[in-house]
Image (tube, rainbow, N blue to C red; front, side, top):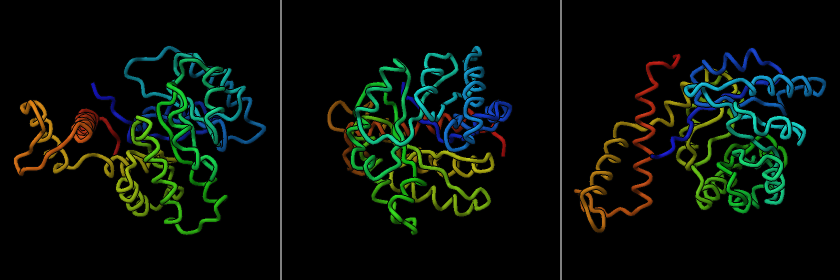
Length: 278
């Protein structure tokens, strides 16, 4: 069965456990509890304690998964092994050695290294392929933009493409886009998502629930994409050799895998559309 990549991930401050619980009903595919940038220094300990308590609770099978962006190794030690933890997001990763260290501290936990510096981008593939516990990688654009001195958005496109290529080369799912910081500018978010999708991203992190429907619509397969994927899958089932479509085009295993992912995303959207807030 094809694993469905979450299209929407909602960031929530770790020192607001009541908001974390509400976020699970926001329509997001996953919730990211942030113990790093979103929490003031004097609230870090409380945020860790509150998140530990939350993740210690029994998890229903239908519950929205919770990822945690950690701040220090103390966070990792406190959270690793808790039943409610779906993934640890690791800020400011620059080398594969850091991932190996964290994997040893948190064995069996899914990891998502965040590449937020020029050095991290340079080592994108070695980080992505560093350990079996790495399930995804993501780009942290705010820190990278500051380090590079980039003012125009297009100045990050090479780094964005580097992260997409590194993820796919390492056998990981396409990465999700970094957050769009202006929660009022939904037209800008829509255009940014379209650009990210063209670069190869799949899904996006949000910082406000109002951004979720825009992100989901931007990355949900269109009717034309579903039709094309269905044709590819039909050819894969019926053709015993090279796959040939009705218009004479040949497709390979990678194209079939992409079609399978498209149909899985379309089924997910159909199953959940009626339960999502608008």
